[in-house]
Image 1: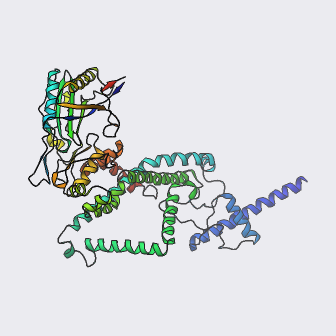
Image 2: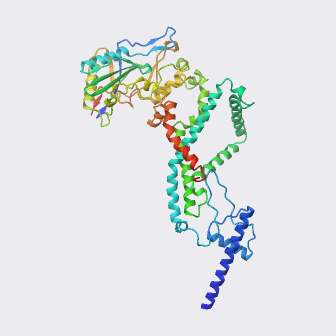
Length: 142
Length: 385
């Protein structure tokens, strides 16, 4: 089974990237609206989702709790948007991906694909992202 | 015939006793006069004594030159005259000596690595002390003439330039220096590069020292791969490039705007060793790692006075979740990615080393280096005190 935890996409949402007046310093890295939209999706899927968390050059992050699973999402603005969605449950991935995480990941991909605010969603393994490899349509496949 | 054999045996025994006595006298005289005389084995004693009795040898004409200890590896202990009654079966058994040599070399590896860590730590401590003197406004006043930190910088720099110039005109200088270094390294780490000892204990000690040397060499090789070179002084080479500003990024072929951006001072949040996404287990209270821990100097990598480009490169290499970002409009806008610039992620070991702030590395290394200091004091290449 292949599990792709990284995604790239385009979005019509504001990028929230803020620079100073001189344009020579980044005051806020982008991604607040995008990660908030991802948070809305995860909430609809039944998770207890945190507000967006600012992570400087990493962009924006959020935590989501599904049952006992603690999931984590990060969105970074580079050329387009780069997102990672992982199971951060303590010692939770030692025996492989948890069924509930895989289910949420699959549902999230489906919702992103349906949501008109997101375009060109493609999924990658960590060693594939931004390498020029063509992404997959689904994060989980045999 | 039987009488002839008995008489011949008596003659041989007498000759042997005379030869042994002659060699013993010669050895005693050599000890008193400081003359070099090495007799490693009973057969060497007998051969040397026989030469004296027969008149083929003169006193003072020792059979082998004295071996000088090199870098902590003692040569075989000079053999005393062996009358066949001293030493136990272990001393006389070459197989046992070989076995203890192998075991002793293995035993020396780990303490040798610890000693390497200790020596590196001492270098770093000296380096930090030296660095602090560089920024001490009173160092020049309080130091003897020519001994201030900045004087050392310039004299060392001149020395490097002189060495380089000499090497260009006379390349054999470099070859000789490298050759001498390799020889010392070989003697420290190669059992065949120093003579074997003639007793069980001496052979164990010789090989333990070789094990120490090998362990230290292993630590040095590892630390050269994973940052020891920086700790041992090559950091100056890197620091020299900081002053180069955008030029060093332009030299890599980066666009002008991006190079200018990378040359600006970094003022971001740094790299967190305990990632902010890390959640504590329930039995530790759950929730994120408290900022008092995650933002402490032990767990936050944010070197002072580092350029944006240097920090971003380090960050990309050590953090699997960081890949790039936007470029401010004043510098041309657009974006950059580590992969696009050819910055490869470190392997886990290098990630742990380069991604850890100096205080964490110092704390983690303190135990290892402390044990190494004990080895350094207790053994120090000369055997136990």
